[in-house]
Image (cartoon, rainbow, N blue to C red; front, top):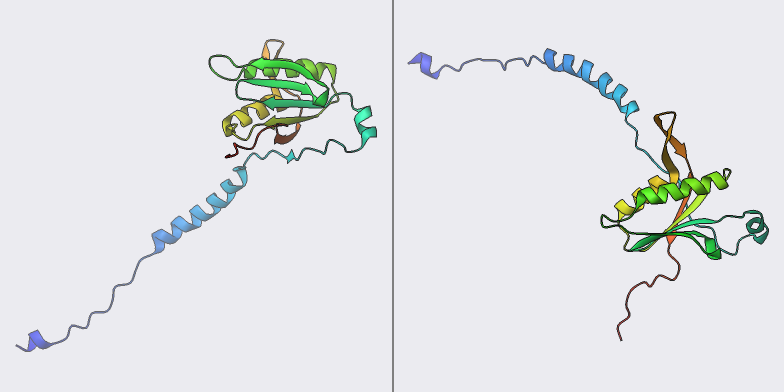
Length: 171
């Protein structure tokens, strides 16, 4: 009977964390090294400049490139001076290839021009805006049998299409 009531003096077992420490010694430096190589692509965008700013600067600059995105078309305009080209939608949607070709021709005429303004309606999808921005910034050109990327207009500003109605008013 004495054995039943005798308290067992058992000490808690030691935790063997050697394997866990080895894992941390390898894992932490690996994560720190690979974190440097993962970067997020960021585009620097500017707000559109006011239309009345520095008239002397506007006289020197011959082209004020604007790409206006509507529901059924994309217009390439020279500011308020008029439409350069109107690109109507195809059955699949916006004609991004045609947009790229026209922008390449404009870049040939104005090789020093780097800025462009993308004006979109408030209901324009994010995907459409990104596609247009990509086509305005870079074009894929085939030279000597190889596809190369050529910069077009890298300084992009984004704004609203002028004259866009903000919504219907209740009467």
